[in-house]
Length: 81
Image 1 (cartoon, one colour):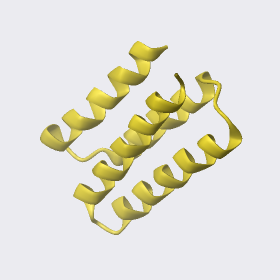
Image 2: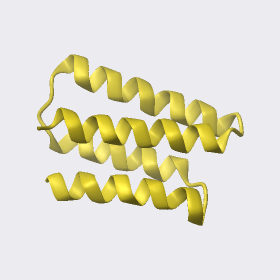
Image 3: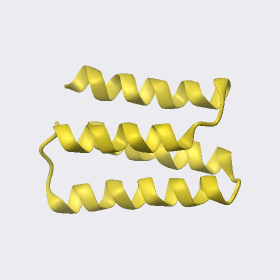
Image 4: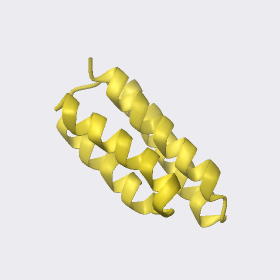
């Protein structure tokens, strides 16, 4: 499980170089959330970051979006320990 989440984080960071695919990153976060046991507060914070990242994407701020989504993925990885 930890390897899956770590892979998602690396995938997100590679997205900055390859292309901006923020919606795919958000789906990866959703997939990770479905597979881990974390508290409701932790889940709410990660979802809040995911939603903010998608809002930034829709507004055209892709750099901020990828940064926010990467932060959500890192938080997911840290919280699952």
